[in-house]
Image (cartoon, rainbow, N blue to C red):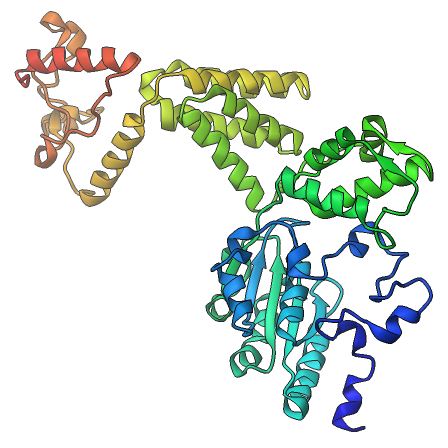
Length: 462
């Protein structure tokens, strides 16, 4: 077989054309080779950058990927973004705009043997014709470290241009050597205005779209679908197609039909990945920022997304001691009670206890002085592990210990005049250390006044 025989059947994947000419004559395809029996989302895949919606931070004038395309020099990259944000489509368009071969590959359904095959073909193609190859690896995070390492020498040598797509944080899922050769570009979830444009495109397009379907669409229904899609263009087009099929030729898709087609909107929440930690962070920072409305919203997102309520309860307890602390010691009791209430009531009734705890924390005075004091004390304890316990603080259960001076001179403060003695309690070498400085809010204001009163009577007041 000659080198050129390797390119037989390249038409549908060859860049720019997406399968034109003879492909358009096949039954069930339009003139551009689009399979008209495919789902609407596949049929409406943009064929040019002008039809691509969203991601202006990457494709706007002077932006990273736009500049790369203007120079006609595609480079290896990792596209990171949520489902339906356009990762695969963008990779195809990069190939189309720069006139290179596009070879898709799924890390879910194919293995490293297929990667080697693609790379071998790409090397022969480059040598025979000078045509470069984009190897598009969908779900690249599914490959383990060794499998990802297999790309490195071929990316470095320029045999292939690797474009990896992932919904997971590349910092954790992609090996560092690959990240150094393939910069990460972040795709954002699409906004409602962008999704509405995508829906309008599908409604108006004849042939591959719904323009000639005999179905009409109310604006209210399209607005609803755009809002319900959670930034996912594929989901939006799927709901639109389902609603169209529901009413049939000559029908009208209104709000009721759109809702029926949607059935149940699954929350876009990842309980195991980055979304899990980002939602928890949003809840924590909303409470720390004393915003009860935001706290309730992120709590609702977590609950509705299927987060383990026990995990939420643990986070709330942590917030009570870390961010409220001594400014309102009752916060700890509230969060523990909320945890127990949920365990007693279960879902959904117990969720109200978590919501009440979140509200309490968000509206409580804030102080991290206890957290800081503990960190400082722990650091000092590690610096001075040999500091001797003062004799008057030592336990003296035997006569020998008493003879050695254990416990000698200890003063019991409640028995002293005024309830305060002149005693010290830290080791001699750190006797003047101060770890806890109460803040000016909530209960800590009272604590500060009390500590000042004690210090004055010990002779240590200012």
